[in-house]
Length: 421
Image 1 (cartoon, rainbow, N blue to C red):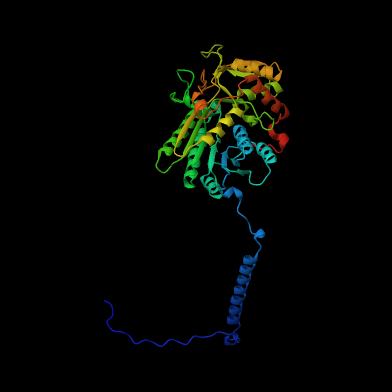
Image 2 (cartoon, rainbow, N blue to C red):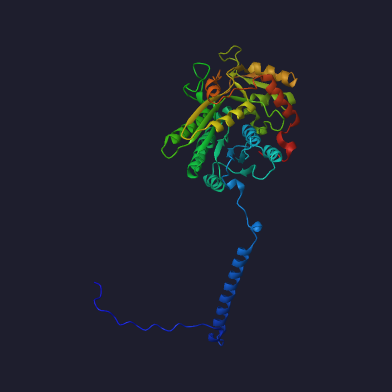
């Protein structure tokens, strides 16, 4: 119960004033404590005065990469030090986008980044961050410190043969890392994703050409990991919390390089065996390897070798930029990116011989695990909806352009500076 009686008010003590005369100077310890406090207060006051009176030019300004700027689109390019990612970054920079490259350099090349930095040295155009997408804390920090408007997600291990040898690595690197990127996008309200997928998600369809409605039954871990990543993206895009703009580009076999000779393909030497056929052709032409190994001559195709749809990297990055420009909030676009024409491996080798001027020695071996006989696209949807059509469709010319870069860069980007994988 509350008390019913009132106590008599007590007189307040008179306020006490302090002065140095009140100190007991005969007590050295107490005197020392008082002086220490006074000195501390004086120092803190002085620091505050200095900070408040400091000229604005001496204060650290926030990075332009951390600010949303009207009229400027800031794109995060994951895997931007790699073959396709670096070409995409180049095109974005040429089109006046602001670009941040994130790459762990396990497959990418710091030399490619240096080329881009030399081409676009102005502040606020390009930054490179060395980080692994498998580290959620690092990825979240990158998103927290930068004002991204969109993400182009290229970063991935991408060799069919290697995926059959190291399937867990592929599921972790492709599927799990895509989930990390999506979670960071959701946390930091980044609403546009351009996802680099692959025709390998289709497996070996019964009918050609492949359309976007062709059932997806991948037959190797690389294709399966990419399809899982696609499914995660699509599921999230349907959720109420998403409201994302999503573009998924399933592209076919990439060849070529920058027509002006600034960038090219330079895979780590230990992965040459699993690499693209164009790289093997060039290595044979340069004498780095004794000849070209063609794996599989008993497929049900016209000449017994695999048939593929070869898309020039310049056309491929053009498709990515058009997808970015056409992306709409709350909508999903899925597109095949190819020429619509299949070429056999034997045709490819003949074109490579003509492009390099070298009579490359060819040896034939059994099929490579996880490969499929024939794959080529029907690009009608991307032609119609994004107004995109492959322009660089002459196989020999694309190989000639790539060969020009390879001849000048026998050791990859080593000529551009320290070569880091």
